[in-house]
Length: 471
Image (tube, rainbow, N blue to C red; front, side, top):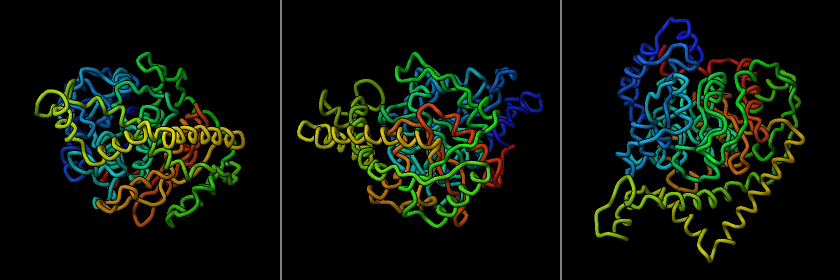
């Protein structure tokens, strides 16, 4: 059952928040050992559910939260041994706003350590498996959240998207994943990877569920100076008639895709043309190079953000004499991928290479943004694949560069700061496929309106959980 349907049943008194919590808690305990979606369950869930006012807008809604989003009193690890026993004394704004409306945190989901990865194989604890094929990855870094929603271990989930970490796992697991406009959702309480790129985003099995979460989370936050004063109107926007929009098919996303992705693109275009959209091919010439810039800028910011993990303030403290030995012993607990990105970031920020790498990458980012603005003067939405192929087998990407190429189509939206939505659009050999829509800055609601039209015009079989539904 979808989240908005559960919420309606609670509002009508057909089921209580505690009963919903009991069903999902038992389902997670039964099914998750074979998937590895969760790192921590909320052991106080049933007691918290008892105290929820059924009249609240999100009463009875259970949310799985990616484990790099802090939850007061509930362990938050960021998928790292350095924070293995960290119990946050404060709450992320996004979580606090959901809870204020009656939602409950079911538990914390697995991720690539500090959000650095595209498969959730780089978690310090264990990999997460794809519910459609346990021999394949769920994507990353929000793989635990995507798997939990796909398997209906949770009705909805929160992830974070730095270069595609909500959208890519959403595509691999056959769910929706929204990367909002940068600043649309407060980053307060999101453990930083790359601060100018990070964005909390919702994951769900229907567009209406995304709207529920965004109306609760989005908006100005005095605790986050980068948050935007754009009042959310997502559910209201879905109730409005959809105008005939201009859809631009991005030429740079049409090569090197699997047969299933090519077929999904063709079928999606036919659906939107049937809905009255005008479709034209457009060019975003800098997009193929966006991956290069991303893997300069993101590691540079990671190098700065992860410098705080030195054993002196919180988290794991390595053994040794005071000073450098403690720092070395502490940071030895970083996983290989985290070490790799921190070293790359430190290199590109060094005095001898700053202008050659970091400075040029920032200049490229400005050009990419300018091209995006020019495109949206011609069209209302952009369409391209989320990934070039369905989920790949566990262990099949040992080469880091091959793993980095998984973000080929997703990093552009983060660098430009614009909203992007991955939606389920087809199948290939029994595995789900996703496409993504991009909209101009601040036009997140437009994405959901177009995706809802597609959802309602197509076979909704992709909304079914592969392991059956909880309710």
